[in-house]
Amino acid sequence: MRNGISKELIERALGAAPKYTIAELEKKFPPRDLPAEAMVSRWAPSPTGHFHTGNLYPAIVDKKLAQQSGGVFMLRLEDTDTAREVEGAVEIIVNSLALFGLSPDEGAISETEEKGAYGPYKQSERKDFYHSVAAELLAEGKAYPCFMSSAEMDAVREKQRSANLRPGIYGEFARDRNLSEAEITAHLDAGKVPSIRLYSTANYNEKIYCKDAIRGSIAFPQYDDDIVLIKSNDKLPTYHFAHLVDDHFMRTTHVFRANEWLPSLPLHVQLFDMMGWEKPVYFHHATIDILDPETGNRRKLSKSKDREAGVNNLLSDGWAPEAIDEYVFNIIDSSYEDEKKKKPALTIWDHPIRIKKLSPSGALFDIKKLEWWAREYIATLPIEELTRRVVEWADKYSPEWSARIKGQGDYLRGMLAIERDNPKSIRKDFYTWKQTLEQLAFFWDDLFTPAEYDKAITADFLATFNFADDKDSWWSKIQAVATARGIKPGEAAMALRIGLTGRAQTPDLYSVIKTMGEARVRKRLA
RNA sequence: GUCCCCAUCGUCUAGAGGCCUAGGACAGCGGAUUCUCAUUCCGCCAACCGGGGUUCGAAUCCCCGUGGGGACGCCA
Image 1: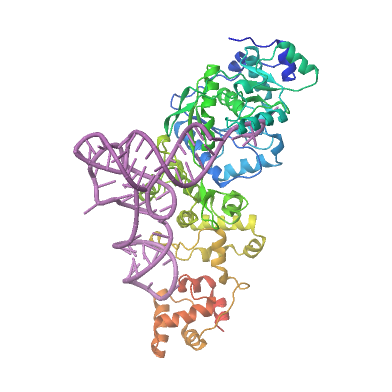
Image 2 (image 1 turned 120 degrees about the horizontal axis):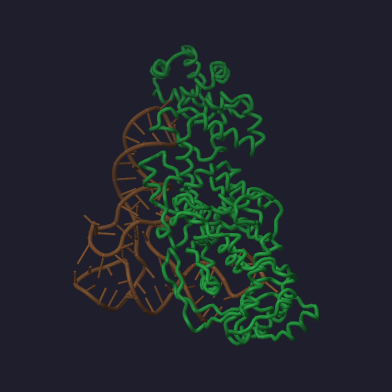
């Protein structure tokens, strides 16, 4: 075993003396007092300002696993890339999670506040922890200060590329891995700021077997890169090192993340093994893709090209978060839709998922299926709730609709209630709050646009019209008008429909009349 | 260049060697009901990427192809 560097050098390399020892951290963040089956999961986004539709998938799985096992779901902010910091991003994440029923048990609850005993949950505020671990690694010779400049590293990669060698700072290419204390001192004296690299003892020619809870055991070449642990510029950790330190001291039991992390799994396993720490259960998911409308190729959902990729867009278009939850959840576990057919009151929170049943391959975003889930969801809402939600949407996203509805709550409620009383035959012609308003636009006098129809027919109708008529007598009057003119009742009804609404397709005519009220009906037919 | 993952109807999937004549859902198409539309109901279309093995038997196991995705950063 090689020697580490002196305490003084460690402090100079890190920029300050470490605040804790690992033993102290172990005491500060003791193992959680939870039943054996409880899962501690975390969703760990970078606060870059957007809540992507694809983020829903891992967030729901993490939340579910904790929820169904009596565990803990954490929200951790991976804000170690100071260059990508975005103002207000935390607020967006926290609010979006809440809307989708995904509020964490621990972690950030606003831009400045958080809850939980294993924090801070912002990586930028955990510097002391990373440095403390790095210091011990340095002392043990398991890490070293590296003074290579980015130009020097580029040169190494270029050399490797032209020689057809795999790129990376490993073995002989890790120039500074065996620097003497004198050499380190000289660099430091010259004002160079080092990064801290792992002193890898792995052998690329040997295999390491790693477990993925969905796929099983996977054989990789051992990971022999001397990866950066602490960055030189801001002294913050890289993802790999933060993952090691955070998920150990936060006592995370289950790590669910995108497939792009699968290649670094051997590194992470080696890191935990090196520390002698218990590894979390790892499992990796494919991203939700979309078929590019232009090229026809499969690709990732893109914020700039696909409106549906942004959760905010979905929300402002009037989609119900609950429906989006169900759509995504059904991709997570397709037995949900079968169960839901049997028990309509079922929600995603009542339906346990199993890790091994998660799909190893990726799904394609299917707006048609989302529409279906949304129609079904809206159809289940009691009329009061439906009305409340529509108003809520309008108030938040559409000043125009909001103003129109104001003071007209009963009228709105009336139109929304049409053909909703029989659970077996509820209208399902809209899948967003916005659509419910747009489809019923003809009810509002300022949006009503008259169309051509046979006024003679409606004049006949008006002659015997009595607003108080029940549906049967109303219909027999229509039939009478039709018979007298030698046309079908349907034809007579259509003239009335167009006269009243300006449209050839509407909900049940009798209900429309009752909802519009006598005055409006007479006025429009005049 | 090296390494890793994935592969069943158009889409999401069920399927862990015989229950598979490959099941369901969405979409599409057709029909019935209805004052139009929507709903509801019924029906139809539609898949195991290719080739080799193993086995009495393969969508399921193995190998080789092919295709798709990902990683190889002081980004996460």
